[in-house]
Length: 179
Image (cartoon, rainbow, N blue to C red; front, side, top):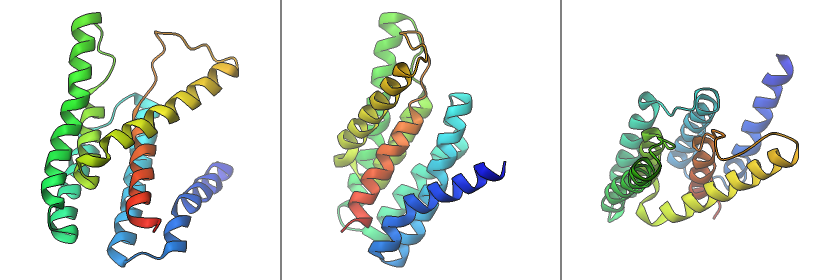
């Protein structure tokens, strides 16, 4: 148990290291710490239960919209609203097509709400990059797992939320932290 706590602190420190080095303005530091906390929570919940709960994704979306209205201003609010709608509709569309063609619910609406939250924070322009980062991350991890003798086939359930969190954090860091 003690080793796990030390490992969690080490991972948090590594993820926050760019913020400590870049020393962005205080609102970005505070938002980054809060985002890292929520993204870590969502990752752990999804890995355990294959769910991204509304009590975390919906406030995350609202906070992203507020962030853009209060701190970024200009066209950012419009980009955030479009990003939230586009993020949700993209995942929802893929889900609907898969349900109709395969009669299987393979992707949850939690993923759609999470991508809507990411779009609310970062704007619609970042959504393709978030999805690309998430997909490549998932592909690398799943490939590694299959090479280490973990049985993975077309019926293996893989939570996508952790990879969406990686995509979100990567784009957040690129947009606001790494200057």
